[in-house]
Image 1 (cartoon, helix red, strand yellow):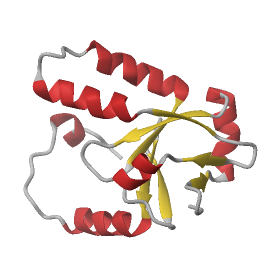
Image 2 (cartoon, rainbow, N blue to C red):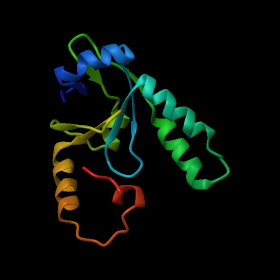
Image 3 (cartoon, rainbow, N blue to C red):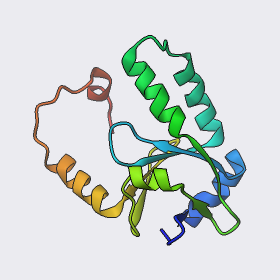
Image 4 (cartoon, one colour):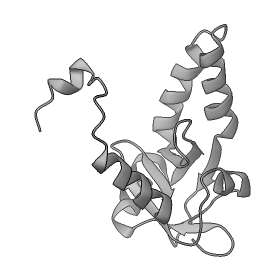
Length: 141
């Protein structure tokens, strides 16, 4: 990330983003980890619709609505593949000069490199007996 808060998307993703969303990205926070979620605009619109449809009387639902939608920021990828991240988003994810972009299917996660390394190490060495969801237990890789 440069001093102005811009990151450069890897070239291999740029052309595809032009095709599917005219390089329009929505960036918001992850409510569980100190990272940012980057959605192509068309994917974000589907997510936003689902979030808005949730009953707002539930405190947890209302929290998620406020955080995800409230932090959602429209960002355009310029012709050089750069996108500018707002200061509040950078601060939330504790982003420094070195960042890591992680593909997650229809979205990306953006992490501070040191934070990503720390979390990855924790996840790889975690031997807790957390219950695996049934759908995950049936998944064959």
